[in-house]
Length: 225
Length: 75
Image 1 (cartoon, rainbow over the protein chains, first blue to last red):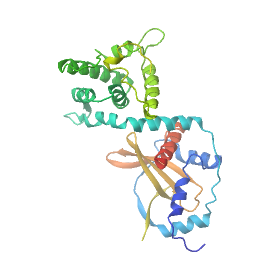
Image 2 (image 1 turned 180 degrees about the vertical axis):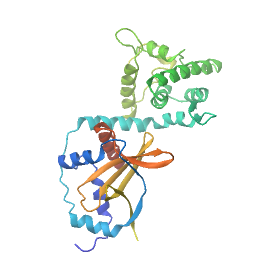
Image 3 (image 1 turned 90 degrees about the vertical axis):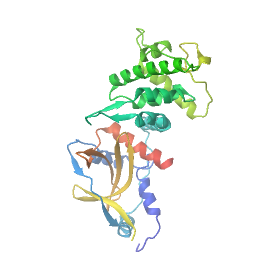
Image 4 (image 1 turned 120 degrees about the vertical axis):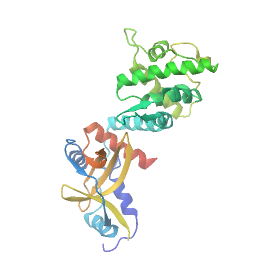
């Protein structure tokens, strides 16, 4: 094959990454080539190469890519999680725009009051709060601390503005009031995440639901979603 | 002249098929030039204000990155 002028080849190359379209061998080789020590690093310096040269090389090398469907349940689950992350990204961005450098430029701080005010303007505060929960804090302990401040701040502003929403004095209060507790009755973020993942899936599927944890209409405590 | 972006890794030239920012890193999808059956994924991180290409931590991250690509491609 001497000449190749269509862009199709590049699209086919893109297909090489498609979850459903590679052989087990290629997958294993790709894993081997991709995973390793973080000490193995190179400077990311790109250069340009002539497209036509490689079009020809790809054709000569053959694009008869072995097709194999590999049942990777973990991959499918991760795919669902990524979709959810993307869905929640608008809410997570509330954290991004309210994250600031410390004066010594060595760390970051969250403008909790600004985040609280923005959350109180959302139509579905439970959904927005979960987007914020996913983004805020540098580890689970810090996340819980930030959430405690946030819910306390939301309570202050909601009461100050006489806003018709349910309020909580802390994150633990939020978790316990809504039944997210372990066998011993301690607050459980895992239970909260499970319930919210379930809720997000329903919203993503187009179900119209009342805000489960902040609407006064749902003032039933321990409500399951 | 139409061009690809490419990088050199371990003495081989790889074409950059896609770059996807996710969770504070950029996942980079690479196909080796001649032996086009081979592909790999690396991530770009910032180190001393410079972009550095490193390997993925484990199989979970590899699966996640592969899925990310698939989601982006199909979205």
